[in-house]
Amino acid sequence: MKKMNLAFVFAALLGMAPLAKPASIPGNWTLHYDWNCTGSYGTLAMSLASGGTWSGGGLSGNWAVIGGTPGTTSSDAGMLTFNFSSAKTVYSGVLASKTVTGTQSTFGGLNGCFFMEAAGAPSSSVSEQAATDERAPNKPEDAAGDR
Image 1 (cartoon, rainbow, N blue to C red):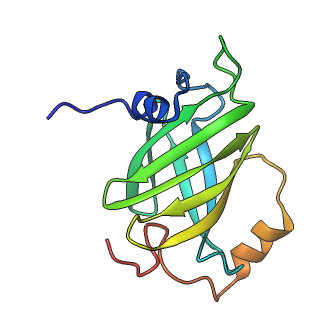
Image 2 (cartoon, rainbow, N blue to C red):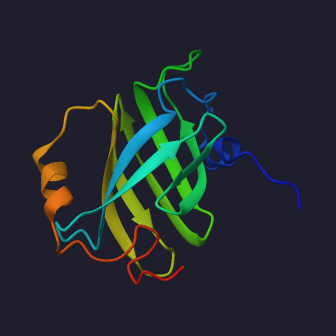
């Protein structure tokens, strides 16, 4: 089976034009995930590669950006979507400069909220809490921690 470019698949589903991989997206990001949107965040350090793949914490997957400034590769705004190679979990959120805010789902009944910060983005009080919150359960790929 031939692999499909996620940017084009997501773009077709949303009726949007995909961007080339913007130069400002690849790099180190911190994912702050919260299953069931309880206010208890776990974190995952991620590295987004220019080829549309990501890795971190022993996990990996694909990512794509949709939208942005027409006719450019600007990443000032748009949608960032990524998945996990080891699970059916998908995260999708609004990209604004060096942050992303959105939701995630396993499509099996588990849903949650997340935000991401690029390396060098100003830290928020929520991300500082997430870094020290021992209540933050589970894994980023699903609420049960199953892969």
